[in-house]
Amino acid sequence: MKASARTAAACLLLLAASVRGARGAGFDADAGASATVGSGGYHRFSLFADGNWTGKTLEPYAWGQYAVDNDLSQLGAGGGAWKQLTPGLSVKAGAGFYVGRLRDTDQTGTSLLLETGLEGYSGGKTLGAELRLTDGTIGGPAQPIRYGEALRAQAGRRRGQAGAPSPLSYTYTELAGYGRLPLGESSLGLRLALGLPSYASEVTSEELSLRLPLSKAWRAMTAVTLEQFAGASNAYFSLGVYRLF
Image (cartoon, rainbow, N blue to C red; front, top):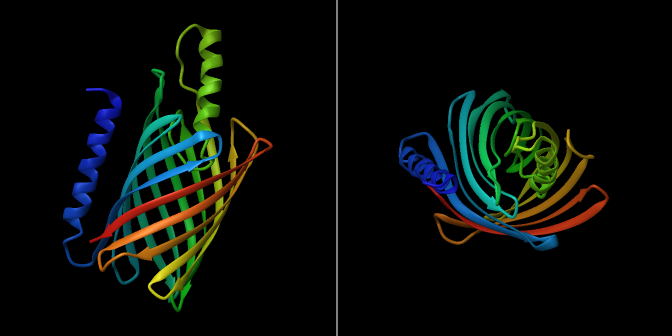
């Protein structure tokens, strides 16, 4: 079985497990799919699932995603926990991993993700910040969206020099702030991020998103992302649907 097929199968199993687990008390979950198109003919399709357990002061969470774009295919999964510091203020810590393959090459690799964050909420409004560190050879953050292209170019140069494929190690640090505002049964979100990759100059991005109810269980989401990377400005549009459990 090809690596991409094994990755997709593993993700589907992850989604099924999330749905089954969501039937228990004190557990909320959702699963869905999204598509992204944008500058330079970029396109991306992803399947995802996430859930969280409700507790008095500690709320564990878990997530999984399979994505394919112009540059690579990757599977990611992870989890952690939110801890309530005071009513309306929580802090989180978590970890995850990615496995992936650069498309049209035999370059494969893995990455480790560490994350922490702080979130405040009142009257349905949310304001938060998070720090994410990815360290590995492939796979990782969604931002910058075209980061796989830069990694593939560097891996190609290394392969030409060494005469054999060799995954490129890198780190990616991202600091982000976000907010969510309820609009009736819908919600509006804004996320601002600064990325510091070890393989290129800094990346900044701004994302405006909207989540809309389709029915009692189904939701639609749409987002516009602006990205500034290596002197270029890119724009992307995303549309997805997911089901609550």
